[in-house]
Image 1 (spheres, protein in one colour):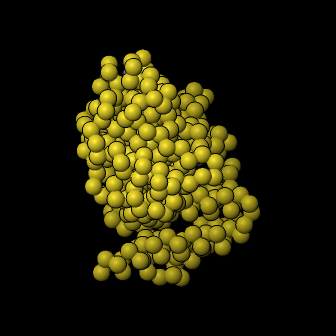
Image 2 (cartoon, protein in one colour):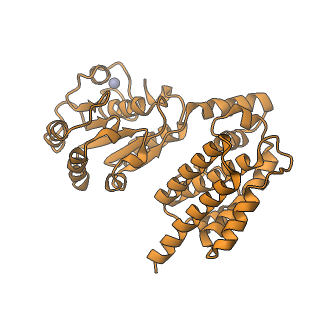
Image 3 (spheres, protein in one colour):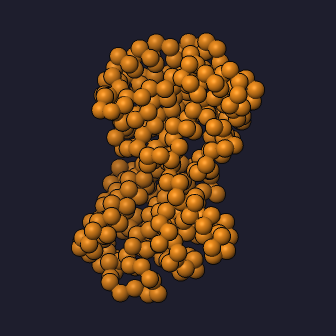
Length: 343
Ligand SMILES: [Zn+2]
């Protein structure tokens, strides 16, 4: 498999390939996201491309180096697989990584260390890794793979460039919407992002209604991040949870939550200096740019995850008003804590 043949998460693939071409790869990546979306495959493609004998910014899959990497025989490419319930131990970390990472590559151009299920590292192993990240080796790159981003130490997270992989279904869904409804690329990708890969939700979304809804959500986010009055926050929550919908076929609160998640995801992209093309919301970037100072990337990601928990609870018929209140207070608290800390 090469960059050219990799399916799904195209923006991530393109970003990595661009960094490879420009020689601007970070010294450590975290690939996180659900199972089966190509995290390990893409890590191996990068390892091959860094060492391929025929190509510079992709891999040929035919040369001796590509062959060795694909078969786990390349001396400069290490794939650590904890497997089952076993943790990555301090011995493994010291033995496999610390011992070799500062050395020149034996055969290739760059040493590559891929740590699968990185959340299973023991605390000692993680601390040993942290030392490596503090003095980045010149001829090596580390790639941590995980389904559970927040299980990694914050100190490790902050020293790696994190890339969030999403389910392949969204890509498929985008193509489906384009074909079935004739939506433009942009519209189709906007809706498939917001519907979190659900065909049912996406098919019932009216793009214009979604755009209107999203505008409302940006101003709601602004209130939640700037608000000082808890009573007002709770009133907003109560309005948010209101039963009766407009023209929605879906539960209106579900749609609002998806949109709210979309706003924070955009803030996440903006605050990490990410590619503006990844922003779901088109238009209203000025308002978003003002909001981006209110939360950092990690806080925005936490909020996005919180929103998805709320969505899941809503589907289990939990009390909607209590859900909205808890979520809004949580968001408001994060922004408040930040304001106090910056004073
Ligand atoms: Zn090759």
